[in-house]
Length: 395
Image (tube, rainbow, N blue to C red; front, side):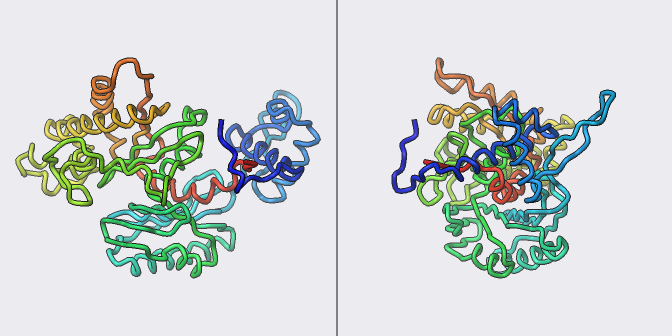
């Protein structure tokens, strides 16, 4: 049972109940559409007149639209679907090497994107983001409602950037500057938290019913986003989930972002896989190979590439086993460009986990993300989009 926080409690008044029913109907359309009014009434046990009233409000608000279903001999049925005619969100994925600025519709489909090289100077990167966001806003004639930003560092729940170790950015008013320049609300989060948020709202269907899972984001570093009871757990000042810096050994092939060779990310990141490949290939091609090329070579059964990724998978498995032992999630989702190599690494991850965790613990599913190689971009977009679908809290 969740304890009621009396400092934040709201009495459930009649308008609160209407808002909750509105969100329920909207989410039925989002997850099961195209769907009829009658089906929604049957599934929710709401009166058909109530459903019709809510649907009309959602249509007026531009969130859903009527579409024709398939005819079975008579008139085609009128079904309901999300309205996806316009871009409604801008997502900004600030990476260690490049930044992506993109628009999406209400369903999370990316409509347009621009990229630029992330500058170590925060002011220059912020200016680039503002320039591209303004351009996208103008192109969409006022339909953009908000901007979400994912950052590779610590971000507090209020959206104030705290620390990006790669660039040594500390306590900079990035969100405030972008909001002031664009006139739109801006929400920021850590990249792994944002990716977990995207999995929660736009991920694979089998995760829709999962209330507790961990997203392991493998990029230049390793980060984790934790979802408890259907919401991202951020901890004090957004510092939860920094498992990439837990100690799992000594003498890793690369240092972590903080300079240690004992951290999980020093053993299990893209950079560590590339370092292994360079050693195994004796430097012949490894020095000029990027991670995407390494994955493609492994998929073509190139020996050194497969060996480098499989050793990296072993260390990923060790870290995942620690997460399972400590938090007992229903599922662990692996995300990032490494998912492209899932046919090569999945068995090694699972074998390591099974050999490492204690017998008798519940089985935890380990699955690959379906958000593509850039789950952090989807995470940034989800920071805006999910506000449309989130439930109304009465506690």
